[in-house]
Image 1 (cartoon, one colour):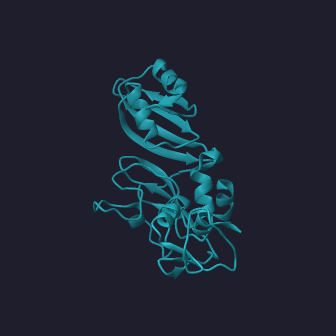
Image 2 (cartoon, rainbow, N blue to C red):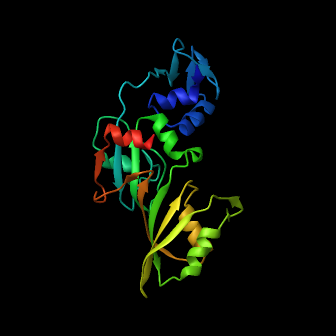
Length: 231
């Protein structure tokens, strides 16, 4: 037996968070009755989403996408903006494991493996995520110290980050920032709080997996060993 939202995620239909939202909306039934969040289900229970049976996924597909700026990290957008789903040419329905805001670019994992998506995104997994950040002007060590010492962001506690200088010039600086969690637009908000202006932001690593030489908009299917590393 497992909680219905975990079961739905493991079947590859949607993420746990999305499942919880749909359960609240009454879109799921178990044995013909409206489901509730946290409801235990087993192999003999009939779970349906809007009348369609939800069955375990036999094979998962996981891809690494180099998300370009200008795309929203979602499968559809009510405002008509370009979505990352438009970049993946596969018959499987893959959803993003985590997010990058529309103006950011770089490494994004797309998968129909709900358990993998949860391990990547949940803070308890402490999966390190490395970003390269281009900043306006030449910054000094005190700016990096401010980022490293920050423990609250807009009144919310955050984990310490690792911040290192990559390159500095009068026109601009590039730094590396490593997170073990992912608050909404966290790096941009942290930089703003430190008086730094972000010109470009790119995620280059999740766990031990690196973006590599994929060009913006390109993607590749991950090997079994790479998926195991993400687990």
